[in-house]
Image 1 (cartoon, helix red, strand yellow):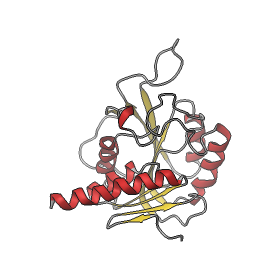
Image 2 (cartoon, rainbow, N blue to C red; image 1 turned 30 degrees about the horizontal axis):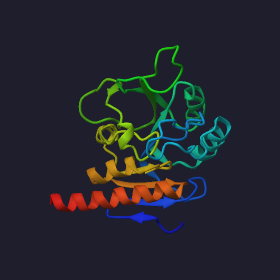
Image 3 (cartoon, rainbow, N blue to C red; image 1 turned 180 degrees about the horizontal axis):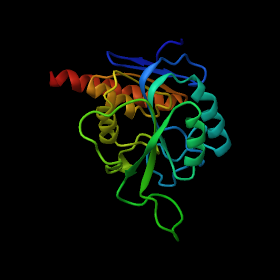
Length: 223
């Protein structure tokens, strides 16, 4: 395995292609892969003005299909969109038992056809043999998105949502093969959960490493 780009007590981050790095067996894969919609932000804010690596329909499908056989996990939570969901259902279902679909209700419509209902949600495929802890929650998860001006990545998910998912699944080990700017890793770090991340784009590895280092400092200051 290559040398880590970043490492602390709980988190290890690798810079590289998740199809070429030895991935650890884990309790949970929690990831937000390229959706295959060639996303480019036109907001002009932050990092969102450049295309996301591998985010074209054919590229994303090939990436998904070549990665899934390499994953060893008890459970998978896989972010997706309505138009990518059919392929996720088929591909993920070949390797894991499909358990259901979570709906992340963002509260406000996002990008899309201005002459149609604005999409105010994203989907999370749940597959595998994992069990939730605590009471039986509903499958619609209401968390506000990260404000555009505060994003380190164009499709960055709110840390509160990722912390909720981790707390609900209570894994000892986590893998995010599409780590982006590191939000899954930061959520795991804050909960004291061991997490491995892989990110192909070095600019996001650098951002993630800086955020994780700050989290270590913040955690230390709270002791």
